[in-house]
Image (cartoon, rainbow, N blue to C red; front, side, top):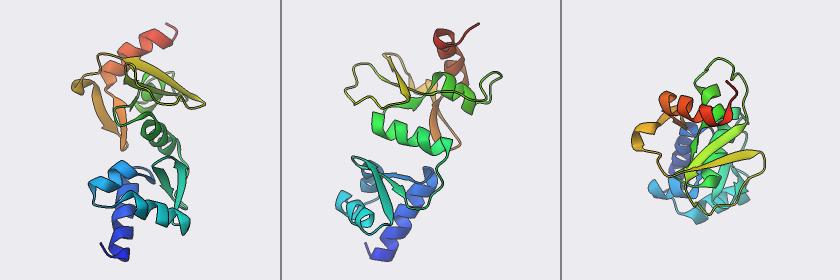
Length: 151
């Protein structure tokens, strides 16, 4: 892939993920990890974690923090609980801590300021996308709130 076409492909990935580009996403588009590392060395990308980059100059938003947290927690992670309630604009959740749900016994490093819940029963029907962020469905979010929110 030519340099300019590669940059366009990286930009397209980032535009779909709030400026975040992972090696996994890039590989699915035919871009090898070494290419992302070279773009980071040249200043076009900023490396934020192993295999996770942000397009230089992209705005740091709440949605981007959610995407970064999910990328760091692994491909099966999803925004959940109070954070998902905030994304669904549920009453009482204008702000919320960053919370994710991951499959049970996921062996990823825990990140500071990210609450991680483990689940054995996160079905495909419980997953959706809101504002280009993977999030639990509204129904699953309400069920999850019972474990963390006051009545």
